[in-house]
Length: 117
Image (cartoon, rainbow, N blue to C red):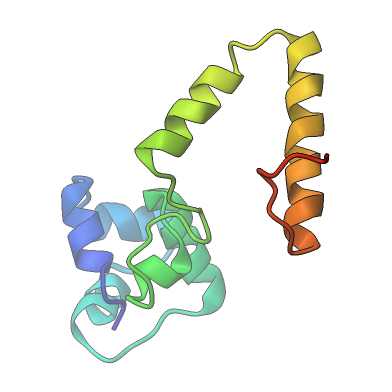
């Protein structure tokens, strides 16, 4: 049984028949995927996941992340990204160098905030 198929289908306003027509399979197959221990082949799983914009892992109940391996960002990280997009290109280079310096020092297990003196 495809764990979240019925939920996603209903949330998106699809009947079993409509989803079956899109997938090129029978309405009975959708019923079996939702209610019985019948599993679709991998190509059908991928098509269903694509239709609903979720990962196959989410669709089968293996993950709670709807978008595959997407990283969940904090509000602060999202704010940083938004600010980054407003920074003029010449300043981005300076910021990149600073981040690379931090990354290098962190990789060498030193305090990246400590001065080089």
